Every structure is written in structure tokens, then in C-alpha cells.
Length: 245
Image (cartoon, rainbow, N blue to C red; front, side):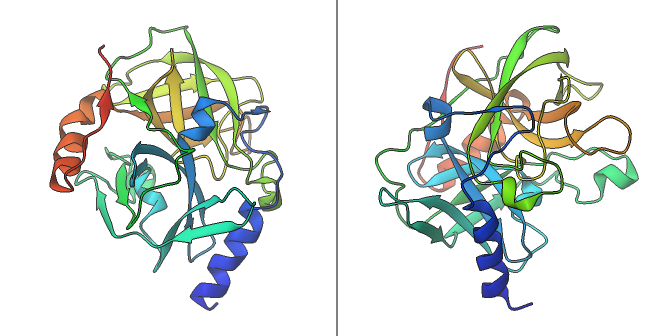
């Protein structure tokens, strides 16, 4: 399929005005103002977190594996905006085959665009803090509200989940549990937040039985990757806003 046609198709799904995060609720609060979308020429839809006026943080698999990518949002008139990246940095430890080979992977990427985002967008406050097991955290994204229904993506939604394994055996991951609630297709790259601060980026989800969504959501903790994030932003003369933890 023609790349531009495929991007337009992804946009038509993402802009349907439907829901996101299975079992979640529409959210137009601060976290929504700190989030945008990333579209791929292969039809992929992802979420991303604003870390500078012209830089977003997302999952590495959202900006690899396709010929073209676009940072996407709608302007004040509701018209779609598609911005080609000016630069992108994929974490050097990202492994596209990590799940099938059961290997370690840091599924993170930074994307810089050639102009600042509109003033209504806010920089996310990042934190290296890790939530204790059993605590409630908030996950957000633009993904599908119903698994397999691409037209149900495009609206930012959030859901509260319980941290069931804060660090993982690698000390790099956070595992979150919901009851038919959680991340789904299109939520990769979205924020995981506690206390107003983003501490992880969503990368993977699993449902009950054969379902791919709504039971377990997984994210990459930002604390262990702080040095890489800051070093990459410095090369672009930018800086992330980190809180203590």
C-alpha cells in the first residue's frame, strides 16, 4: 500500500473520536495535555509523552519497523496535524524480537519534531520513583477501547491499575493488573503516572485467555533510563523535567 495512503488510513482510525484504554474513561485533564500520538506508514497507532516543547517520549517499537512516522494531534479547530520527525533516538538496548526470544529489551525512543507543539500542550513531569507493590497508578493512551476495533482508537483515556510487580526480575519493568481494564493496541508509548508524575512508558499488554488486552499491562521504568534520556536530550539542547524519588 502507498505510504501516504497507509498514513491516512492510520489517521482515519486515530481520529474517529472514539475511545481508548479498554475499561478506561475519557480524560481531558493534565495527562491528556502531556500526550500526543505517533502514527506509522504501516498503519500503526501509538501514544507518546511530551518531555520538551518539541520532543516526545514513546516506545521504540512505535518508531521502528515502518518507512515513515508522524507525530499527530488535532489543532484548536479540530483539524488533524501530522508532523514528520526531525530526529529520533532509539534506546541502544531495544530488541525488536525480545518477546519471541525472551530477551531483555529497553523499548523506549525519543522523537524530536521541527517546531514546538502548540501552547496547550504541557511537559510531563518525569520521576525515577517506583510505586510500592499494591499501590494504585494511572495509565493513559489513545489506543482502542475494544480489542481488535481500530476505529475505537483516537480519544485519550485513562484507567487506574494496581502495581503487582513494581520492578520485575530485571529491575526495569513495572507490571500492572486490572480486571478487564488496561492497555491495548495504540496505548504503547503512553504514560504510567502516580502522584502527577510519569514514572513509566507503556510497552505491552495481555488479556485473559486468548485476549491481548485488559488483564496485565507492562511499562518500562524511567528511573533506570534517566541517564540515557538526559544524555539524548542534551544532544538536542533540551532537558527533561524530573522530580525527586
